[in-house]
Image 1 (cartoon, rainbow, N blue to C red):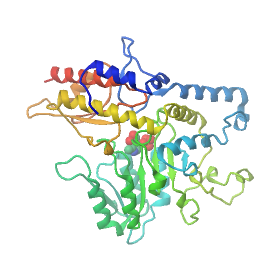
Image 2: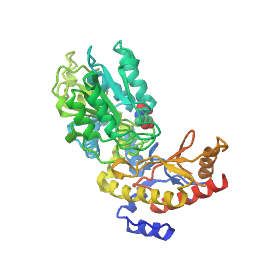
Image 3: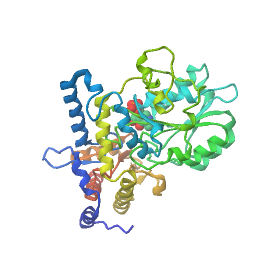
Length: 432
Ligand SMILES: Cc1ncc(COP(=O)(O)O)c(C=O)c1O
């Protein structure tokens, strides 16, 4: 696309944006002067869809007026409330509706999935993950390995970028699986890497992993609601995601989980069970013989946390109103492309963008590394970040020098992208 570096062009892009109006469905935080913030932090916590507030309020009213009868009453009874989310989740991750379920939180779900899909033997006992995985994933894997009485130094197989590079090459992931696959029990990688925004090639990783006899699962924290996926067609064994980033479902909201149909009838799978995973036709007979459902719901433990799920339902309806994940991706390609073009045009000598330029391997996030020269104040990057925050930009900061920003198609505009780059340029000049 041919972009232009001026405000008129940004406004023209907004005028031509077929889903521009969806921004009005969100509450946008304000600056002290009453203007909207330039909120670029959807990779951390997405903004609140107005429907989320409306749907949560509705369940509070139901609770107040119906008490326990709310489990069975109205259009959205609480007993099967999680089922109202299945279609939306399935669209987002590319699954059949019986392959997805909302439950627990992300790290908890990673553990529950590993209980079923990490089954080490004497010869096949390793878990392949990134050297710099999100710490919670690293801790979860390490503790699962210890739980099986194994040594993490031997069982954690860590993939990292080549020396001098920031991104992990897909060819290196595939080569490592080819080389060590016979000893790998589980490949567990991100869909989108949290620090660089790099998209992993889930399809080829799953294919090569399966060819070597490994289980393959993904952490989709930064992928769900960001990029379209086809988990079912790719034959991914399991995946877990949080819903508070690109799925705008509120702080600490309930997470999502995918289990491929291939595993729904496998009675040999170990699992930590609870009553909500039991066959729903006989659940209330209160018998002691666990009979798992033949769906991802079999991994549920508890009855659905309705208030949190109501917020997710509000978010999923908002995504649907915008035309779904594929429509959001169409805008994201332009919006992220425009922001990258502006950064490269205005500031290429002051920063490096760690995120891949090839949008097949990038979501909406751009990870911007401020170039620090010898003799620079080590806090210079942080001062630049503080200066943009003072001007109403919300992004996030990672020491020593990285600002992560996510122009989210649901509520960010091309004008936001333009203003952000101008504000960043001034902050860099002032802190030269
Ligand atoms: C990649 C990744 N994994 C795990 C987590 C931990 O999520 P939770 O606190 O919901 O378990 C996060 C949180 O941001 C994350 O980004």
